Length: 321
Ligand SMILES: NC(=O)c1ccc[n+]([C@@H]2O[C@H](COP(=O)([O-])OP(=O)(O)OC[C@H]3O[C@@H](n4cnc5c(N)ncnc54)[C@H](O)[C@@H]3O)[C@@H](O)[C@H]2O)c1
Image (cartoon, rainbow, N blue to C red; front, side):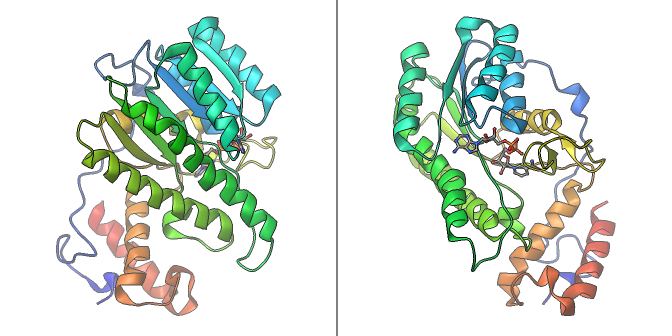
């Protein structure tokens, strides 16, 4: 049976389970410190990789506004230093650590951890955000493939291997947020290496969440942050163009993420002005159904499935809205 053929009921198919109520999201109402949250609150420590621009910079600023101490890391040393200055204005100079770090190099990540623990003795929020992207096919650009995996996947593996053992010994609860991508779930054609690296991030973060959850006395949780279309250096070709109407700002994406982390969500699928939550839900279900139903790979982009996919989306949205 195809998911698109399941007429009538919201609950009639394991491929289309009942969706929870979806409410529209009010970003404006969020910039308020929730002092009751055990991890994201004033005085605790956040480490953000890829903090020199885009989502990482916006996250560092929001954490600083909430009164957290900040250790920021990025390969772009000059830009990182600028962000450091901004953070010092918000949260005070002694509460900001600027550490130029290439996350793909284990020894630099070890040095980052040592500096953070030497300064503050703990990590409350570890945001693995550093990432790079490039277009390309599956059979060309081997150097590109290595580079993308070195940063997007092994950057996170390096940080996890280095920080998690220390975080597990902390008395206070803490959390790890790994940045994936919708492209790591639905796999749209055109960015083969990027998509594969982000699929690996999903896989490793799910494994991490399980391992942490099963460990007796673990006080650490993991979260998979899946940004929507966000206007940043990565998506704006240098950032000299105006924000497209469909994209969210990095601040909007980060505020949404912080709200969902506070609620304890593992999968944090962020919408944007072009793709609402219901559209993501249906696309994710369709992609999973390729495997379950034995359809051709990436059938969403297969000419023989075009009409069926469009019908599935139309009907699915009509049911969900
Ligand atoms: N912008 C989007 O629409 C979008 C969508 C889905 C996922 N993401 C993910 O969000 C994360 C942040 O991306 P962004 O959009 O803010 O892009 P960005 O380019 O503005 O920021 C990425 C940052 O990572 C840094 N970086 C790159 N390689 C590094 C390394 N080896 N070590 C340390 N830092 C390194 C860059 O210098 C940059 O400051 C990435 O993981 C990206 O894949 C972004």
